[in-house]
Image (cartoon, rainbow, N blue to C red):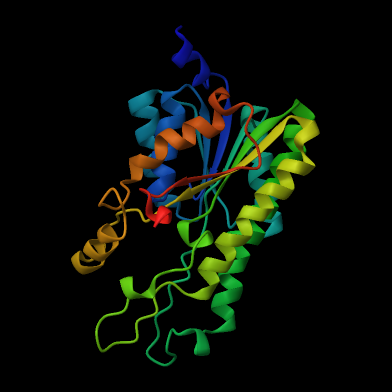
Length: 271
């Protein structure tokens, strides 16, 4: 085994991916099993979980566990960790990927800050921050028992800078697509990472943030063009653009890195 294969080797590692059946979760799961890891895919959509599980088993001959859980609920977050431990025996990697965008559409309430509903704020906070806290807490207990581990918390470019609403507003329309709840919760993730990295530094648990820029997901042409114009590389990210950074963070390639925020945004924040 050469040097590169060795530092990215995840053989015998056990990973939990929350939001594992989503756009980026799919890519993370494929990458992890291709490097030798076994994965527990955690999501709320059982159909998507089973589809990805079958693909990973057939294409990679991987050990895969599918778990349906609402990680914003303490009992479900703890249960999914216990189920993963029961099958795999340990947890080496937690990818805190589950989240909600906070997009709000209503014919009765304008989705602007001045009228933004508290229930939408609460919903985003429950998943994006509380859910991450609960999963880190439950997985951290197990990592301490086994002598260490790695956590990666997924933020967003809008946790680093404010959304440019000109990307979303159409001329003559009020169309506030990226609301306050998304930016504030994604920003909170950055300091949750720093706190946990400092708190668990002596327990051999590394905690870092991965911050993606805008990822292409069949958005309308006008939005994509405006986003491309704001990015030095001239395009949105493809989902697989996050695979290399993720593997770097969970592997020995980043073994002296903790509490950091790895921004993968095509250069958007240099402007």
